[in-house]
Amino acid sequence: MDSFALWPGGPVMEVSPDAEPVTTDSVLLANFPSLSGVTRCADFGCGSGLIGLILAARSPRVNLDLVELDPAAASLAERNVSLNGLSGRMRVLNRDLRSLREAEVGKYQLIVSNPPYYPVGSGTSPEERRQNARQERTCSLSELAGAASRLLGDGGRLALVYPPERLSQALCALSSANLEPKRLRLVQARLDAAPSAALLECRRGGRPGLRVEPVLILKNPDGTDTGEVKRIYHLN
Image (cartoon, rainbow, N blue to C red; front, side, top):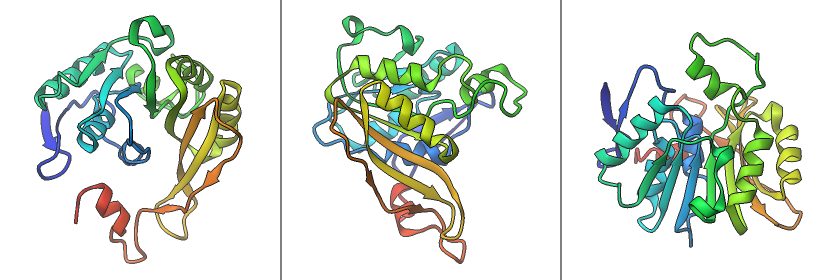
């Protein structure tokens, strides 16, 4: 099993060939929500713990629950938490997020999730574990939204990354769960490319009103990273 630092002096991660790879979508999501005033946060479907490690590095005040259904991925997340000396601030729950109740975990101020993007049967994947991560086989967006609404306090936020082609479905599912979409930022590889991802933040019980933010461009015309990407990846 290999390990690497997310950036020089940053959190260290072990990675497994069987786990979902570190993705740009997850890194962008981990840097999307404000952590001002946040002390209790959860990552739904945490995989190996990447998003949680970045959030913990962004704010020393944040305590995190990493929720993961797959036992192998949850075990890897636990190793990554321990590897970074964060066991006092982070715990891994090898649970079905749909079964979590407030009596067990309390209320969160922020929940983040990089959920499965596609309906069951979309695309192909050779391994069942990766199918569960990419397709809504074990949890639909509506079910995730329902769980988040139940476990967020009033005014709490859910931040997620989702494919633009399913954005209308996401907005409907989230609004139906009393999670009002408040911020939207599209991601493009280049200025002349179609959006490849949508970063979305919702507020539990929020008033209607969606702010569409400037597009996040990943590459300059010459193929180099944009200044914002360099900042996110600590490349400056």
